[in-house]
Image (cartoon, rainbow, N blue to C red):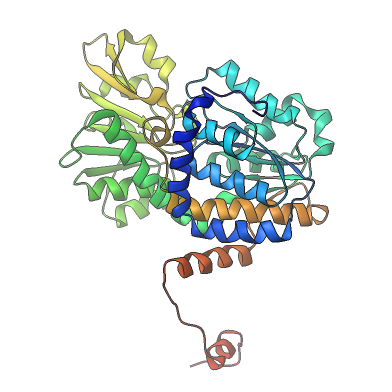
Length: 419
């Protein structure tokens, strides 16, 4: 067994079957893997990936290895690891994995540092923890880094802040900003898998419930859309007037969290910011309110603040911790405030991760081939890669679209022709 830190290698056979199941629904990544096996674009490259250790991720790292990369994988969230998947990646793919579901904060950062001990040339992040650790504690190592890729909105926010302050030391491609990522993964993937995670943890009825969605970016839109589809009455909480207006136009109620707190039954934070739900909001909530987070980090819910105003706490179901307030009311926090879709469920469906991880694979290839031309900034995935992924996805679904006629192309590319 390659050097790793996982829960139990004996889980590998179960993980192998689940990875195969996911692979069946990832046709775009399969086509890219076939290209990579032939072209070997990563030959001799060391790549460290800090991602959710799921069946879909297993197919991504296997694709990178097929392209010649020397790959190591660590977890990007303590509760998102699928231990059987981790075991199979080690046993059947020969890729080192540092990830254990439920690992504490110390072990989590030990695993981050194990990935950096690998001396990667390219980082692949889901939340920017590899990049952040390099810049804070491993500055001498950054000269070895060619560049990186970033999967999430939260990570891109962190990286853009670093670039604006002039402290980002290598280029990073914002995979999250690709249309074939955020328009689909964030909206349809997060929407479905968040509902799935809350249902698995609670078995509550959505129909007739009031669901409060904090944040109306692409992920928030997906959660609101799917909650409404389940029969819930949806309230959106926003700080951005454009997004608030959009939510109103989409048919949802919009109000500040102070007004939503007393009426909501289920609360979902998906903002990428800190302390969205605070003690004053918990105290205003109904008895038995359910609180979940669908943002990358568990900072969106002020759990420490909740502890201070509680007289008792207990684990009442798997992934459900009940806090009793001094008033006697109870607030239920799901999955320790971490990504509920991965803490209590299996994350996004493979069909949508197919596009996200196709972006990761092609973005890493682009970075490897073009890093010498790129500045120390955050870049979008090149539009031609985005369109190619869209084309391959439609092809895999058996769907055809039209092509422009020469006359139409000429009209769109000219300024002389008017009405």
